[in-house]
Length: 326
Length: 261
Image (cartoon, rainbow over all chains, first blue to last red; front, side):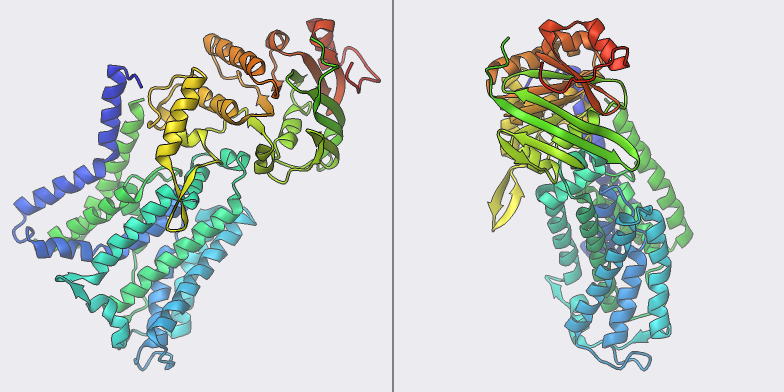
């Protein structure tokens, strides 16, 4: 189809701005590799991905919810609850339940917990039409609290080998979790872009009345989105327990905002309908790269927060710049 | 224009709809014949959109019957209506700005291919068909890959109309299709509606519009709604703007107007 030169020029700028997060990531990676001694090594690169796994997986959950036009603040607490409960059910710690459940049973229990929180969130959003921010703020507060209350809030350790194997296994010197995260990203990006479920999420987030006019069952869709978010967050928590070989009450504190940062830097819009996991993956890697660079240089961890704060505003500004090239 | 010898496509029989204590539609009855354009006019709140939304399956009526193509129908959602060939162009266009033209054209009727037993969106096929649909109807947009938010108002409207041209095989419901358009674009839309009637002998169109000049230009008959009631049905050739305006505003009281004359 015929394109005017000016349109073509604008399309190119938009395409560039759409992938800006990867460009930022590559620039940062290059800058750190050149400027920070000890940063440039394959091991460190793998390490960067390895340390982005939890935030990265939580970001998948948040991306789905945000694209549907909602918000899920409970992911951090679901992950923490999942970690605490799975350790409480499966570990040999004196503070654990003593049930010594098999790893896979513990896994099923925490996934069920994640799904239940998702159901809870969706119920109040769908049936009572309460804003998702308030509903999930509520579950953000009570889900972790319940886990701490049930387990007594003690630090627990001593997980069986079958549990820890997910963290200890390596292929070609690369931790299994790295592959796992990449597989999850590919899978969920595919579902988002190529399945009916994913397409309906974009339609709902883009124009709710269009979704209704075209016969999409919005309520059912929201149940699915929130349950998926809960289950994915629970999975992240279970992996956190495996890596830590235990759990503490404060596990995963601030992961919500880290995940939200990754998602927003990755180009997902808070108003729904916009974004993809390709960008979010880069967002998660950017955060992890900054952590790594600051660790190596032994700089104050507060600088990390300052940089992240500025990154959000830069990423969001670039995104709104895109809309100017109409 | 003899409509009397034509087949009945749609028969709406004493249809009512209430929202709480508000009567949106009261015993509305009328008929739409095959291959005619019917104008649905009335003041704001007269029940036009309610009627359209019942016919397009957005919500059910509270009482009365609707016969489509000879069969009694009761839609539980918009998909039911679309399955029998009723396509609606909504006032708000129902365009998703975050998706490209072909995704918008195919909303709710996406094409899937089987991959390992799972339905996977067939994006290439939808793009191919979009090109064809749009060029068939003479609609030009810069690129089917661009998100619709980067298109102009007229181009976005074109996509919305592309839907009815592609799928509206039997009954096309147009809710204020030119409300947001400029003069030239409005002209195009009216021509498109007229052309559709000429080219599709089995299709009928119900047009909601506030612009009586427009209505008189393209419709065969006019149905006037007031306070949720069908207050008058007129053949275009046997009425004039003055009479229709009087019916809309209530300057003329018509007691027995249900029927097709």
